[in-house]
Amino acid sequence: MTSLPVLGAAMPLDALETHRDWLIADQRDLELQDFITADVLNGDWQPLVDRARKLLDGYTGRLGIHGPFWGLSLANPDPDLRALVTRRMEQGLTICEALGATQMVIHSPYSTWMYNNLDNLPNARRDVVDLVHATLDPVIARAENANVTLVLENIEDKDPDARCDLARSFDSAAVKVSIDTGHAHYAHGSTGAPPVDYYVHRAGDLLHHVHLQDADGYADRHWAIGKGTVNWPAVFAALAPLGAQPRLIMELRDKSGIQPSAAYLNNLGLAR
Image 1 (cartoon, one colour):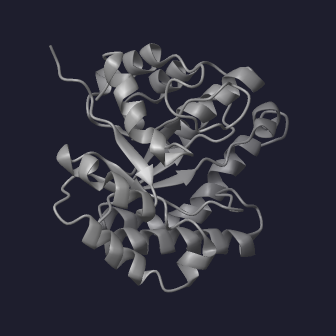
Image 2 (image 1 turned 180 degrees about the vertical axis):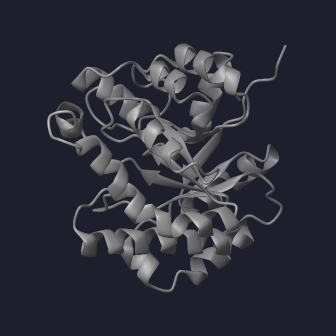
């Protein structure tokens, strides 16, 4: 019988103080959330990196960060704004290099509006891909050299395939996909998208990262696992063929729910 997949978690450094021993005991995957705002990226972030390195003394698990995303679109049609998005991505990579992180979560550009209109306008689907390349192409070589994988997380994505096709278009080991279970559940419940496990199946080997959060299919809840209506047995059955490849990151609004959520999934025989 194969061992259960090991859960990781996303958290800021303040929460890492609390969960450090739990993370290090099993060298769980970790995603730091301190490097997403312009204030941090444009300021002196070195003390945060120094604090992280001190807290992670003895940690040998897979480390990543959530990249910048507030107000940013990878498919921005304005070249001046697109240059800013590229700069933010470069700043995120600089943080990864300083930390020794090997993964950065970035947000899919696809919206619900796009789902209904990309085939309504000439070349609209291709235009989105071209705009994202204009944004990310300048940073891909650097990501490859730094051994950092950019993972495209579904946000409003109703179509599980669009961002997968986008990731494939780079033909680079540095661009893969992420699934946020709560975002997928919202899209399923509110916009008629497929259920969460379908997103996993459609991503297949491209899937290198999962945000695990529970929700009600109406909003982006980030509840503790078991508090919502996500079908967790179906999700983990879909994940099983992928082994330890995707990082299974609990991304909860209330960080005190991290360890109880791990216990909940362990009691179901799904993960530990």
